[in-house]
Length: 315
Image 1 (cartoon, rainbow, N blue to C red):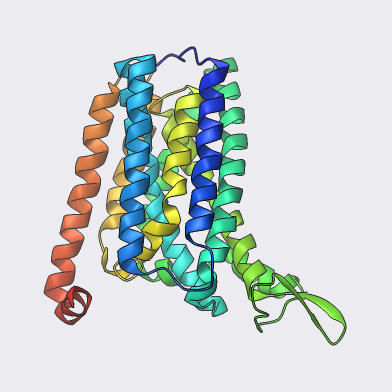
Image 2 (cartoon, rainbow, N blue to C red):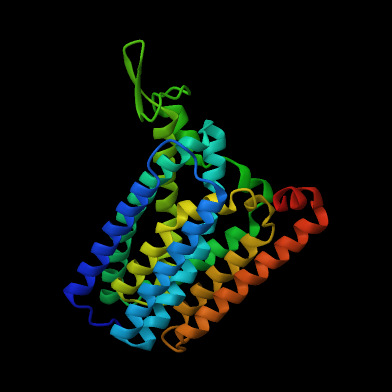
């Protein structure tokens, strides 16, 4: 892998697109009404189309290899981001956040994730370019994470994250919501509302996920522009994807095995990069096929063991 020569105007274009997309999203989703599943599906298609459009720009401007790297990194980040969605469900249920307020928390959470990912990616790229040995550290991290994911009991997917339990114990807060506010006053004392607890928990868990997903992206490309832009487009559509998949996530029984396989593949790529170069297009195929098999196997498992849930969702 080698970095591409990205002009300043390309970074300016990415920043402009990011501001435009965020503005459009905020305007389109203003108000207190919850998003419908139909609307979320449309927005998911919009975000995927935008990502593929930017992929076309990268391909035309920087060549086919850069375009293939962007596509592979985007698919990788999009797949791994699904793991975040499980935690969103648990966090909102634990804190009793209604659907009308979930969108607000996720919006701020996504904005925070865009900033933290930039920091992680810039630092990661700098470390990789200065010390090649960091490649093996990233590879080892991904392999360890893959093993942990495989050994994770099914019930752990529904357990509240430790960061949430810590915040509940140590942060002065109230379980009572106060409209859209993140802080409220109770008996003259300033307290955090469940919205703030949810937001901080989501930001903390995203940092933990970034420790896995960013090294995974570097298994595809070591270029900061490719890695960050693919992360941006994967994260931007996360809220809509959450609404689309929320009712089906618990039925994706084998998804964690697919994600573990993808992480292990990325880890192996980094560990052998000095001797074997895996083409980006091969990464695209491996990621798509692995996640596809996991999803299909999960849907078949759900149809056999939970036919009532399958029928209810179809209705």
